[in-house]
Length: 370
Ligand SMILES: [Zn+2]
Image 1 (cartoon, helix red, strand yellow):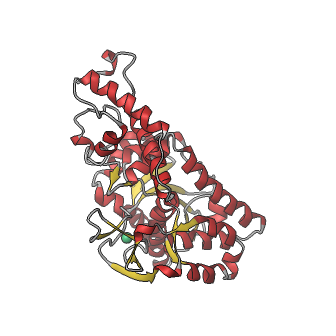
Image 2 (cartoon, rainbow, N blue to C red):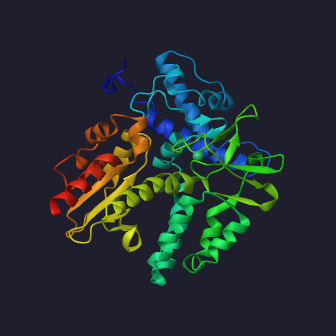
Image 3 (tube, rainbow, N blue to C red):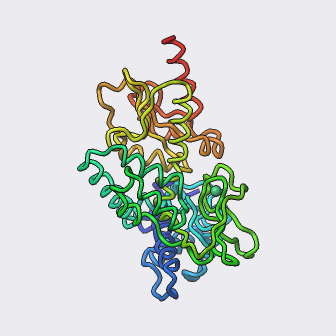
């Protein structure tokens, strides 16, 4: 092992290298998905990441990929098989950046932390425009309807979208809603049909063998369940990738928790007051909830340390709630998160808990009040 103190000054930071690599892959995927033949040069971040990885490999006296193409092949393997150690990178050894030729959620998370300003800006620009317009019209219900549309319908036919956008609440945001969707990629259609996933409502895409179809959403609650099929001629639309990752994924947990709380007879509001938080629970002495669906607790900890939300004085308790899917994938998720981010440990103003733990706390308060 090389300790940081003995690292030569020229040795690259593996965390920055991985973030650059993830950003480069996202850009490469965007360019190849646009349907045009890919033209050199490769995204600058891919070349920069390769240069840095080469230095790391050289220092460890192991071999490095010889080209960007070889680097892209390497990124389809879990980090443990790379043969190059990445000290301090915020990744788990079983994580991969590319799966079936497409960026993984891990890649999205890493690319967003650093470098993928473009993806983040686009999301913020669109969501920002939606907020501005809903605020100007004093229409919080339109904002909520927009978020729900994105969560419940990551794939939608052109006709269905038209019908939804004619509803009074969504009409206000029709322009923004149209921008949120792009045409389904050509590979999503086979024999003139586009298949959707019954678990999440997203598109199914063919795996490398072109015979097996899979849900691309890593946090899909039921990836094996078949959903509706639409004739490709109906013009199926698909939510932009960054919105699927950062709105739809966490949104499923938000809606599920809101439903569970409402089912206990407790008042709950989604994205109250134009998104001051994800959920506001109870009328009196409200509880404030931010639902997080990051796959990796260490990367979430970094994001929370950088920008933890502020809690208004009238709020009794504030929580970062980790969705069921994430806790299932990482049984020690909450523990690791609290360790890496002391700001959300019990006793602090904002406390990180699992979805199940949060619902237990809601139950406790309801019982105590009865
Ligand atoms: Zn699915």
